[in-house]
Length: 115
Image 1 (cartoon, rainbow, N blue to C red):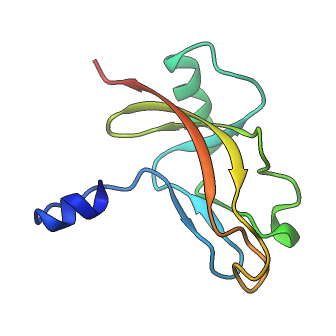
Image 2: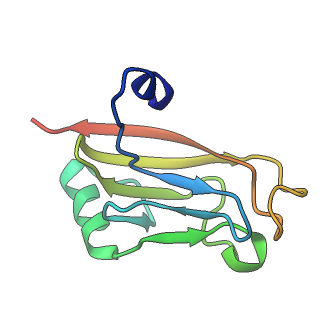
Image 3: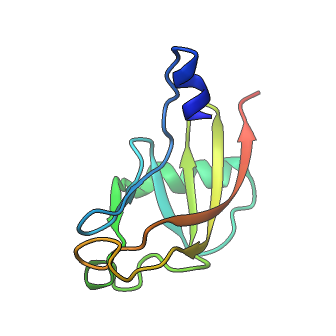
């Protein structure tokens, strides 16, 4: 989508980003947070995201220390609505960044669109 929009002279805002240089920064400029159980709905997820105050987490093993691993649950509020993310997997780690940060993060996403 981002490439297609750029080809049409448009910009697409990024709700989540991952940069795998050095420590592997995973985060968002939107309110978001890691949660301990599946939210009951959009309001529950939004409340969890708003109260956590996170901006990013490093995914390199030495910095991450198990904060984010496959199965981790995340809530975020975006301009499109409230999103519930489940970390599915990480890409290969060997040599991906100077601190062995993963080359990619694979997520399952549920979006409750704004009414």
